[in-house]
Length: 108
Image (cartoon, rainbow, N blue to C red):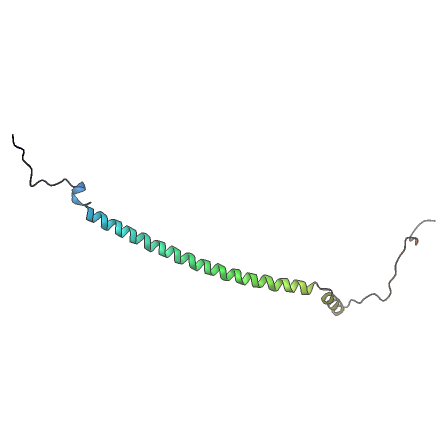
């Protein structure tokens, strides 16, 4: 009994030859390129948002510093005294201190 080898034997392909190794390699390559483009877009968008937030932080820090200086200036004694004079308030002309011995509105 002689064994005969099949010379015309073709390996059965999966799904009629559609999914060959070459096709799978190209499919993987295209998928990788699409993922790379998507990632690049996401990173650039995140970078733009980060730059915008850093600019906003800089503006808010400057505004906070300005408001802190204004608060210190407006609550100082000399500013309050000047503002009081402008609105018609005057300082006391005579100081009267009431001691403990002075009885006010006490029945005899």
